[in-house]
Image (cartoon, rainbow, N blue to C red; front, side, top):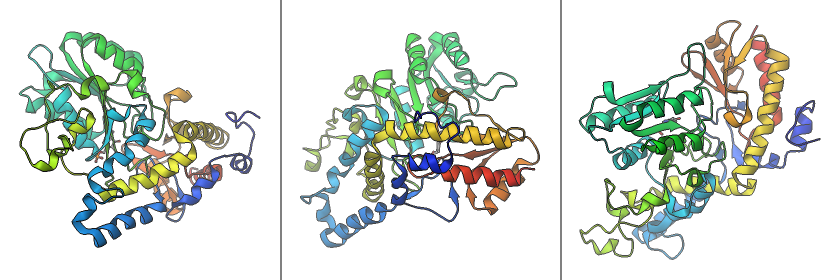
Length: 418
Ligand SMILES: *Cc1c(COP(=O)(O)O)cnc(C)c1O
């Protein structure tokens, strides 16, 4: 048996052979089959303890918590730097946990979208997550340009569901000298398609554009090598595959070659200035020579504590490569079970090639009313989500979903789609 090939094995056999199986016990779940980690990851039990530790320190130390000997709050954000760097394939100087995702996209666009009358376009996808679309559009307006002429949308071909990577590369080449920035998802939120980030980055750089990625659905799901791919910037949230809870503290990546570039425009605050002199309260900005110079405010300790709880589990899993190895087995298993059972009634619009997908499936019911099927899945305690116009998203997450979850989901689904 090759571990990558679950052909013919049962869910029980696959669970028995799964080295990550016991990590499921580290999480709390609502009743039912939790397949919606693409939207909100399940709660690590240790979150309570880590958050309580900080609450206790607040209660007993008060303001001294900022400067206490152990894990002082003024440096607390640094506790997640190495785990974040490992997850996204970045150097410690390139990653920081701060703010929320859309906020970080804006802050990074302030630095990396520098339009001129000749070069003013931003390329995004036509079906971008609305927040990303709004952010790009508003940045264009803010600089005195018009989305009508400055926003370039790449779309799937007629009759196709996913973007053709060749079309993205061709659009980048076509807009060439007029293209200031490319901002695309690493993993598309609707279809689950993984885009070729290294090739897109190279194509953008070839025409002189900056290239950034929204990794909301990429981080904690697929392997990333942002530094080696030469990506200029990236941002992500931590409440999906990083299981850090609703409204979790987001993350940002800026490539090493930019982190100490004082010519970049930047919105700054006191948390971006040299920590050694920060509390002297001088008004001369002395930027930290890392991505931390983009930090504006003091860090949110309770959400960071939750993120640390999640990183403890990821580390015990053996990191993203071990998670992805299991994820590929789960994806292959769900592919097979859907094929055997529902092949004639359900269509997965997610790409079939493993390198073009993460753990999320975008299922379209071809026999009957998809929205009704979704409601019945909910009633049967299958937690998944509906995305307009017509897709049911399900995501087996390797840290906490079992092969039995997948099997049971397919059985229930089969009973509903008639
Ligand atoms: C989840 C998601 C968001 C959400 O943005 P927030 O700023 O975290 O509210 C934005 N963009 C994409 C692509 C997402 O998947």
